[in-house]
Picture (cartoon, helix red, strand yellow):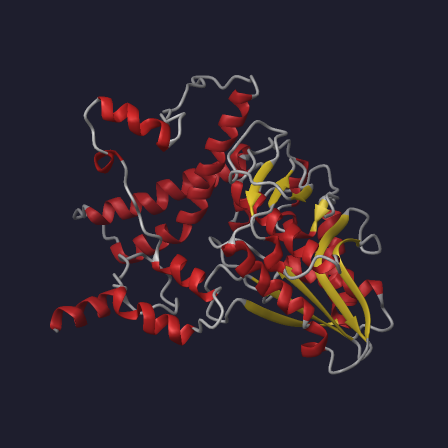
Length: 425
């Protein structure tokens, strides 16, 4: 898959368009993320299945290994390996293709392979792009991005689909700047034939009220006109030597967030104002009249930004010290290690007997989770969801999860209402 990177990448449009000065900051290279590597591996699997006519069904990739290089390069080999473990810079990340990856990547593959039936209105497919790097030089020389999948039809429609393999951050498709840049790149490729672009987010591992596949529709004239003009101006803003720096939610994925003075000032101010207000409200005095619930709401709203900034600072400090650079007042120390056996259970058993220990005292047997067993049964011929439920239904006990704080418009039921109902019964 492509490893080209634009100076103003589509995937970071929400950051550099809101903070043009971030492009010039001497950002440290953050430690590789297992989640980013896993997403790259999932994309490599999808690309391999859809690009190789001789590859066969995706199930045939089970237990193969995907290696992800430091620059996003990938290779799939028939070799049993251990799952990814953090290594030195330059090491390849290793993933074994398991049932879970196949199940979720299949959602994306199935969508793409049936796109012409679902969206082409029976019209001819006039072009297909798979993991294609697209330049937007007609808008600005530094703009570009890699399309996961796109298809054009004779009826004037074009679709693009972006696989989001993460489960921690739910991605919305409406007014998604990354998707709009991709849509513009697609519309510019065929300015005379593409009339509208239908943009899809496929995120099979994260819950969204609209389901794992979500779409937004853009008029191609709007993309090539109004949006292109807006994007061009934002790109030109980044070229200014005194380009301004702004802090906000876009800082979450910025490599320079940990050393950005504007972000540091924002966090300091937020901590002093919002969390200070919460503390004051918790211990009210005659002079302090603070609305505690409102102050707590405001503090909770900025919490993700503060937590992300703290995470960035820790990761950057570790990278600096690991590279041999100094940070005043801090040093690098060994973390807590682990101890493991370096022999097999069969070799260990007779040794334990010498200490008069029984095998039952030293070994444990653990059954797989209900979800894992259900997946295994689903792969057996003739096992329908109804049969699986009949077989396992009475054997599974569901325990509700503990409370968590979510926005008021979250589709989940109010935990306190549920708890009160349970107590009443």
